[in-house]
Amino acid sequence: MTSRLRISACRRLCSWGETPALLDGERIFACSGCGSQWVASEPWTPIDHTGVVPAAVQQAAQETRRRGGG
Image (tube, rainbow, N blue to C red):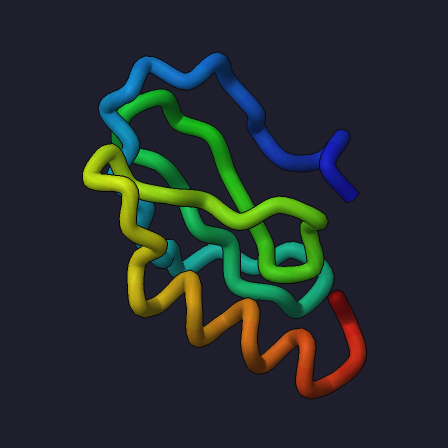
């Protein structure tokens, strides 16, 4: 799935937020710092420049794990 998401080099300006876009039914999250994208079924979890996983990202990851998708 990663090949269909935008993945850019981190610039340490990470600020992840939910977008209205979907990929295979999953909400796409995007980093306003580098433009990278993430969906909850990815094997990694985005972290903001503050070192904190945003609440919306945590929720999406937990829901995906509960459904057995990640």
